[in-house]
Amino acid sequence: MKQIILAAVSLLTVTHGAQAKEQVRLNPDRPDAYVVQKGDTLWDISSEFLVQPWYWPEIWQVNPQVENPHLIYPGDGLRLVYVDGQPQLQLQRGPRAYQLSPGVDGNRLVPQIRRETVGDAIPAIPLDVINAFLSRTRIVEPDAFEGTPYIVSGSDNHILMGAGDTIYARGEFDAPLASYGLYRPGPVYVDPVSREPLGRQALGVGEVDLLQLAPDTLPGFSVATLGVAKTAREIRLEDRLMPVEERAIDALFHPSAPAVDVDGLIVGVDEGVTQIGKLDVVLLNLGDRDGMVAGDVLAVYKRGALVRDRLAGDSVKLPDERAGEMMIFRTFEKMSLALILEADRPLAVMDLVRNP
Image (tube, one colour):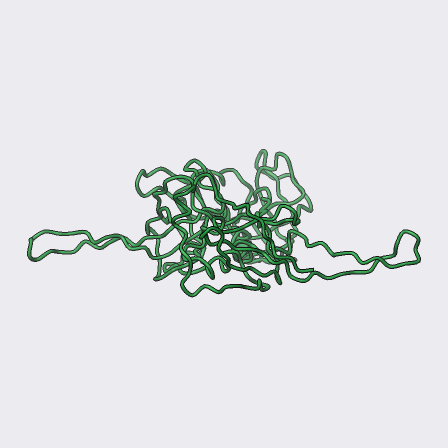
């Protein structure tokens, strides 16, 4: 049965307060109602109703009597209404499938509602883009690869290897694991302002299973026979073995303005791309120590050019111009990974990152 939620509990956050309430701006082309489609994201739907999609919590209403009221599923309807002059979104649950199951006495059938799982809810942003990226990279300490075992050969002396191949690694295996991740050392990122080393990008190559460990001629070294379980790119000689990293991504985070003042830079982009656009993943010189958390939405600015004033005879810096928006989806101590959600023009490394 469809039920329009009439709760008056608003998710106004403490950090936003009344000031954030005044900043909520409705999209001039907003619909009065919207039915959630498969493949939608929270950001997409928020953009339908709001100029600033990260203010979604300011107009969202929750009915505590509905299971998982914070989650939205395909088929659900959203309706924009006004309560005391303030815009609010109300949820109308879509039709749910029913199933018949035997009763207690086994002679009758009882209708039961099939419950939705959390995994069926729409994500905040395109998780497939994030997961594809996380299968290829992580941020480690600059010296993390020192002393790690490395690939010395493939079967039949192949120098490029892939899934299903047998490969060989050499190094110190003090506490052998059943499986390892294969990584390729990437660039070391340095803060452009403070010159502090921030971390090294470790490019994920694949995963291997340890089949055999034999002694080596070098003291403390062993030669490992490995079976390639899966790959994200071709395996090369000198790729490194490290413990497999669990890459669980929280599908329940929601876009929101950060709780701290932000002043950072884009310091890198995946695979050396020079022109950054929508749904590209970038690396920031901001991390846990700067108060960044998954779900923080940040604005990207292009630096204003320095031009010559011919009348005054001096130079003048033009204002920085807002050019896009991003959302942080994973943080490290000194760096973060963010997904570009909007880009009005091509973005680039060294573009400014600020509060939205």
